[in-house]
Image (cartoon, rainbow, N blue to C red; front, side, top):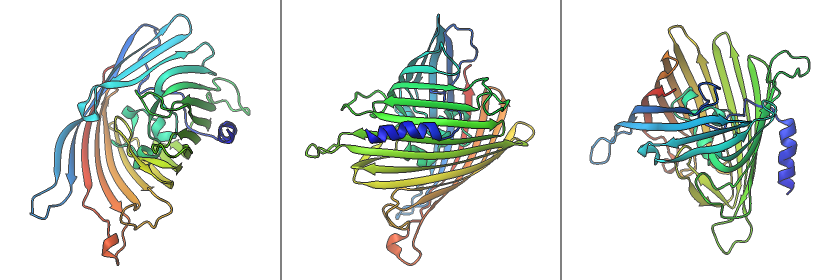
Length: 374
């Protein structure tokens, strides 16, 4: 129980980015009636993987569908709202239920209570809806350390609204969320009595800055029936966002400690792999965007992820991987976005030990077109 009390304390002292959005999209209006929401993301991917031993090209040239989501949202008199979202893309293992929750709004913006299946509020990038990401892919550290993204449970969230905090004139100086979930992921029955607790708190004293912190702790039964001690997963996150003169800078780091087992992979629609053992993992990213004329936004992002902090970065099985991403976003209108990304992927390697040489031909070019339905 000590870890759960620690989570409550952390929630009181940490600071972070707006954390109240549990779903992928917000309704187009607040009229109260049912509204259809959704978006589609067809894309083209070109992976430069070199050649096989028989000189056949392994390069990938593939048209695919990243996401194809359709949902319904609305409000019910009095004080209740609902949100349902379904993923239809077969390339994301669809169709399946993505989000489905009911929210009690009587005391908004200060307090809201949601119950159902929703995305956990952990970190800046995970709290950013998929259709608002500045790069096509989320960072690998987020996919690895924040997985599973969605879970079943309850969440309280809110903001300080128009309250004047420390004499500041800005609204929503503080935002927060605190959830208790099964810890088993979306559309999955709970297999034990343990629960995950996830917290995020926001401090945004001025329009141009948000500073953030997140915490998550949970226990799960070990898959080995002879082991009575439950597995433990702990996550700490910190982030900062600056917006000034058309520039946007975002930096985020996450540290994870896994006792008994860890999840590898995951993210939107992916099934993570369970690996037994004790691990410490970490990663960070930093990205710079500029709102240029003609609805253009150039993007440059550096990210790195270490799957095992206790091993040397050049270890041939658990080496640190990094990516340098060059992107260009074009917004023809409020409902359409075109993204171009080139991912230059780098693996930590030993130049003197061929067994630990990990540099791989795995760069990627991605073109994605997004259209919102509302």
